[in-house]
Length: 404
Image 1: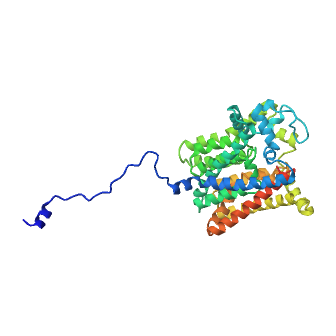
Image 2: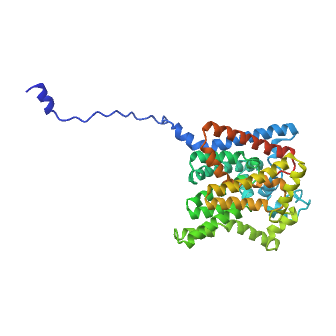
Image 3: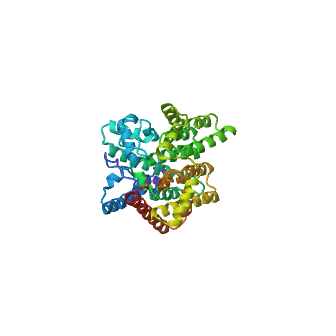
C-alpha cells in the first residue's frame, strides 16, 4: 500500500480551531466605541453647560458677585426654603412682588423640585449642593431623552438627537438648567413622557406626564399632548386599555396640586389667584407681551429686552418651520402649548426667554436640517450658538435684574 493510499484511508480530521486563552479576572477589554456611544449625550450636554458656567463665572467676577450666589437666587431661594422647611417653614423675609408674605404665598411654587431636593437634604446632603445636583442629574436625563426623541422623529437619527441636545443645552437662558430652579427636572420628565408617547407606550407617557405636572404649571401643555393622543387612540380603539390608563394618569399631578391649593386657600382657583395677587400674573392672551415688544423695539432701552423680543419673534418662526417640516403633531402641540402659556400671560417680561426652554420640541426641525450638513459646519454652528447663548444667560443674571 502506498503512502498516498494510507493518507486517503486515514480518518478525516476536523480543521484546527484557534485555541482560546481564558481572560484573567479583571482583564476584560473595554469596548471604547460602545462606551463613547453610551456617554456621548451626557458629554455634549455637560460640555456646553460647562461653557455656560465658565461664562457666568467670568462675568460674575467682573461684576463683583459670586457665581454660586447667582445660581441659587430668585426662585431658587423659595425652592430651597420649601425643601428645608416645607410650605409652612418658609422664612417671612421671602416675599412676593409686592413685598408681602402670608402662609399661602409659598403655595405659588410647585412641590416636585423642592421635594426631591428635600429628600437629599434629609439624607444629609447640603441644601444648595442638593438643589444643584438635582438640576445636573435631571439635565443629563433630559439629554438622553432628547437623543432618543431625535432618533424617533421623521427624518431622525442619533446625529439629529445629539444636535438637538446641543441646541437645548446652548439655548439662551439655558443657564437656568444649572441653577436651583425646576426647569431641568421638568424638562427631563416632559422629554421622557414625549419619548414614550411617540412610541405609544401609553402608561409610561402618562406616568411621566403626571410627574411633570407636579413640577411646573407648564405641565398643562404636556397634559394636552398626551391627553389628546390618548383620546384619539381610545376613539380609534387602538392598543386596548393602555391609552385609557395613560390618558387618566397624565393630569393627576397637575390637577392634584391645583386641587390641594384650592382646598388650602378656600378658592377653587386658588393657585391662579395667588399668582395674580402676589405677582400680577394672569393670562391676557398676549396683550402684555405685545405691548412689551412694541415698546422695547421703539425705545431700545436694554439690549437684553430687545434680545428677548428677538427670541419671541424667533420662537414664532420656529412654529412655522415646525408646520412646514410636518413635526409629529403631539410634539407640535406640546411645543406650541408651552409658547401659548408663556407668551399669553403677562407676568415678568424678563422671564419670557427662560420660560421658552421647555418648548424644546420646536428645535427638532432645526436639528434635522443641521444634522444633514457637514460635520465641520455642524460643529461651528453649534459652537457659535452655545457661546452666544451662554453669554446671553450669564449677562442676564449678572447685569440685568429682571431676567429670571
